[in-house]
Amino acid sequence: MDISPKTSNDISFDDFKAQILHDYEIAVVSRICSLMGRKEVLTGKAKFGIFGDGKELPQLAMARSFRKGDFRSGYYRDQTFMMSLGLLSPKEFFHGLYATTDLEKEPMSAGRQMGGHFVTHSLNDDGTWKDLTQQENSSADISCTAGQMPRLLGLAQA
Image (cartoon, rainbow, N blue to C red):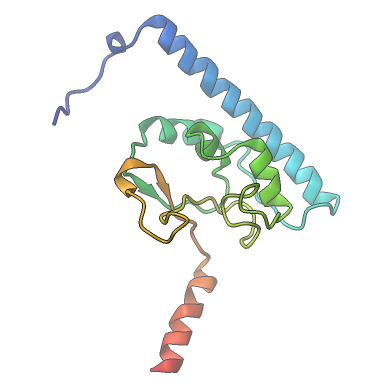
């Protein structure tokens, strides 16, 4: 396994320029989604939203170093990361905000989670496991309070 650091000579200037422009486009689209989403929440059209505006640059940096087989667990504010990896579109983002119950339109949870919990699926449609080493993996995090509920159930059954 090669662990030598990569230098700026590893990619052409045109490839570097394309990466910068792509990252800029993702950052702008994500910021606009945040601003529009906040407006929808504050005007009562969407029920809940925590958005990632102001966090675009670290999210892009993390996405740039993220590899297939890696796992992460975010807690809100990660739409830039997911958009950068190609795992979330602005349309899917807003379907999540409005809790659309169609898994094709809202692939994170089909409207069954609060907005901003971004996930990748570990199972195929037939219930078999996907090869998780061949995809970027994101697990939706839960609040400390929500994490206590399964523990309480386990204690109650004990």
